[in-house]
Amino acid sequence: MPRQPDHARAAAPSPLERWLIALAALAAWSIVPPYLGPLVGLDLDVPATVEVVDHVLPGLCAIAAALVALAAARRGETDSIRLLAALGVCTLAGLFQTVSHATLVFNAGGPLQPVDAVVLHASPGPLLLALSLWLLLRPPNADPVT
Image 1: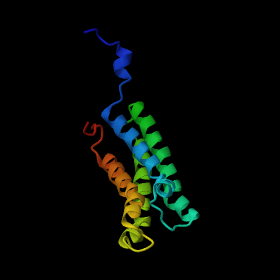
Image 2 (image 1 turned 180 degrees about the horizontal axis):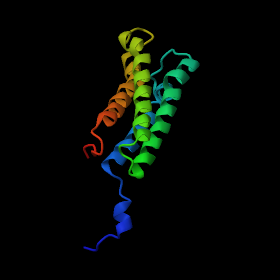
Image 3 (image 1 turned 30 degrees about the horizontal axis):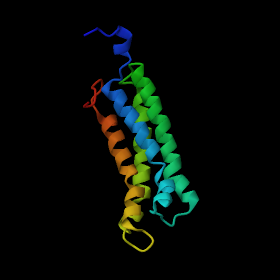
Image 4 (image 1 turned 120 degrees about the horizontal axis):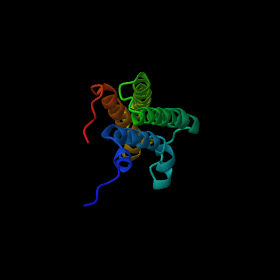
């Protein structure tokens, strides 16, 4: 079996980098539900301005922060303040999305809040919160599980 050049092995992302890419993708997904829901028949009666505040703004902040954390990780700064702050922003964005959907979840099943639409709408926030909090609280210089 031929040996790979050193630069090919160095280009492979570390487990932390892969998790940060997943975090950025999840942050992007957290923006989608209000716009995907009506297309697949899972509509909620929520004003567009509320959707921007509850999904788009925290999602964009989390994407930017995840990319900042990814850049720091690629530079080898896995225990830097920059990476820690970026993960903190992702955690706060996930917390905001989770809390802002609490009343929607508590009222799920009502005529204006069908359960399937509520699940689509409310699930990205807790997932974003859990993943970013897990990455934030990991031991310094420890790669997350692959």
